[in-house]
Amino acid sequence: MFGGSWIFGGGLDRISQRPRCKKWGLSLFYHIYYVFLPILIPIIKHFQWDPIWFGVIMTLNLAIGQITPPVAVNLYVIANITNISLETISRSIIPFILIMVCALILVIFFPPLALYFPSLFGLK
Image (cartoon, rainbow, N blue to C red; front, side, top):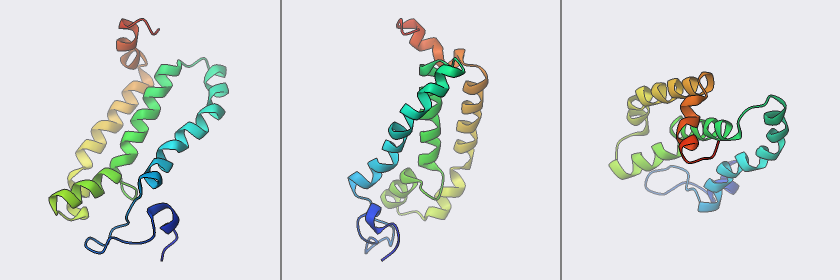
């Protein structure tokens, strides 16, 4: 039906005409991080970055990816639950995306922001 039918489970939902995502199809996107992590570990060690800090950055990137189109898994869920068009939700999510990008920039340039709570629990 379309190129992503292998990932999305074979077509469009009859009611909403959005791709149907199987559980394993969605987890495929999340597991890409785990595939690339062993490749990135030598880079992390070479630049002497903190692995917890790098994990926080990867998690923030994943969260931003879940609410930004075209993948926007969370936006599809919100659109189906509230019966509001995806275009309306996409416009209203822009301030949240900007806040998350600002938080990501702050964590990148000020690592103690991400490492404060782990240090309280003795992980640093």
